[in-house]
Image 1: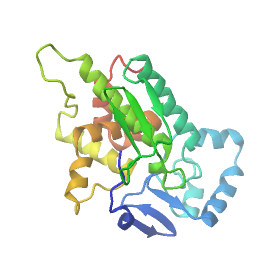
Image 2: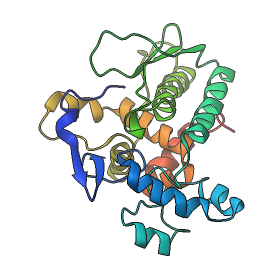
Image 3: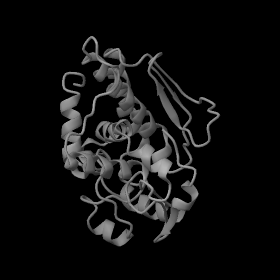
Image 4: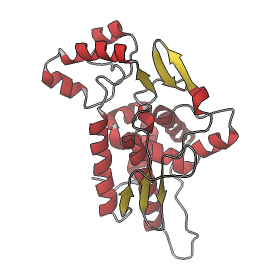
Length: 249
């Protein structure tokens, strides 16, 4: 998984927030400390059970503090009542264990020193190893949980493809998305997880639109925020679930 070289130009100011690209999601937006403090005060004034329940799923993001407070059960404020990174990471680690149980993955190595600019992680099929170098102080999109889940998606995609291989056929990965609607849903989820697919950088655009990358983005969303994934791209999620049938509980 890479950050595009033109990432700085993709960051914009929106109502006092920083946003990665043009689409607002829990992974592409972050608030300043003052806004977060105000929102946290509202959130923590609720009963503990309500707070914990709200933090189990990602709802549509609202940037206006008053509008969010008035509809707090069905909207989320950035980095406040969204799913905490610790919980996202636990879900990614559960998928990691499932990948190991399926023999699709051997090990995960964190804090790798990549020589390639913008590289956050990769999956190495021959050794079935994931290496990561994530940015915990950056946008949620670049933190460990979504990047780990994305790379585990590659492990599952390749692992399931290999288990389906027939003698005499060239090794590769299966084409998963069978209809234009499924593929468009996958693109919508990809942009939710990582920001816009760029129009002005052909290399970056081609990379993001590769079947393997779209699959890994849908897998990551499905694993760490399954309710929101089904809401954002139901046909792509259903197709990935079908593809993984028998390999995930």
